[in-house]
Image 1 (tube, rainbow, N blue to C red):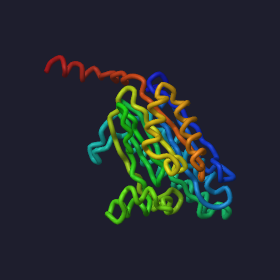
Image 2 (tube, helix red, strand yellow):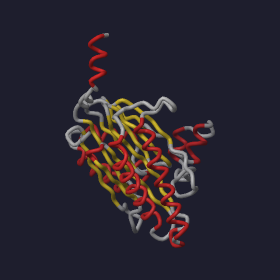
Image 3 (cartoon, rainbow, N blue to C red):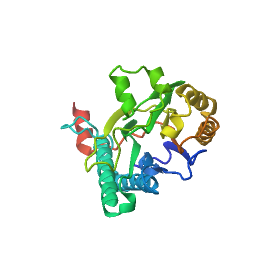
Length: 275
């Protein structure tokens, strides 16, 4: 299904004020309703390479396989939609590709990347992520975080050792406990949700959410919600004004209207007519 007329997407990536190179990567395939962001790390240009591999591998994998499934089909064995299983498989393939590149090219040894992926389909969204790149949803004036950071600090918060306020003030926010390229296997967190026309979904690297509070993010989206590119530009600008200590990347997506009902098979129509 072509989602070009259903989904609006905008994005921006910026080096920031301190770093010499940008190790973030962003990508989308609007026709298939996919958006992705990766924040790389490690070695000489290693982070840049790892994040680019992650984004390209995921988009290529989904381009090859998404059209093979019926939108929104439930997998009875796992309870997930087929899109979610493909998201997990795509990220696993990206992880293996990064590991192979790291093992075969010594200059990239130790490189890795976080990733956050969104797939829109059938008035739904699948969110898949590894690391501390995030996805937010802005709905009816409220901003909600849809992902949970894979960081040491978040684990301590979850176990009650830190409050959210203490975590926000900590200097050790970015010690990730999960990333692509570290091991041959990676655990991918999956979240499924129902979309509404006018929702705004924000994917971002820690270069944004470390510099800009959730309250400020919500304020920017609310002030510029008619223009996704203006939101992206303003968020990057604000992160730079407040220090810009890391690369800053954002991708925004908005469903513009409900998805059309998929065509029914003839036997389904007969069944509904008779019963």
